[in-house]
Amino acid sequence: MITFDKNVRYTKSNEWARKIDDVIRVGIDDYSQSSLGDIVHIEVIAPLSNVTAGKSFGSIEATKSVCDIIAPISGIILRVNDEVIKSPQLINSDPFGQGWIAEIKPSDVSELDGLMTSEEYENFIR
Image 1 (cartoon, helix red, strand yellow):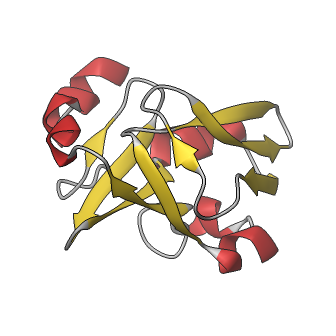
Image 2 (cartoon, one colour):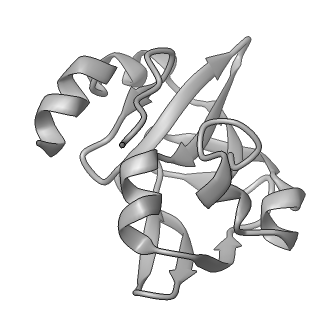
């Protein structure tokens, strides 16, 4: 059973974005992690790097494939989740919690409005 978090916004490439104060926390959703299989490695660009909405800022290697991590918004990477780098399986076990990937300081927070709600995303993937 796929879980949807109503407190995040979603991209068509299966990333989620959660606003926490003036930072956007980013991860991949439950549908994507289950499709990938066991996640074994993750790479993310270094903190203080610029990211552009719709462009790759890292990759996830799983038993079934390798895929890009696409930035849901433009901005600067403030922090990478070191725990998920050390233990990438956290994405499989808790994609909306401990399995978050990075935090971005958005250049334009209104970009979040262009992302899908939980209901829109659920309809999109079905």
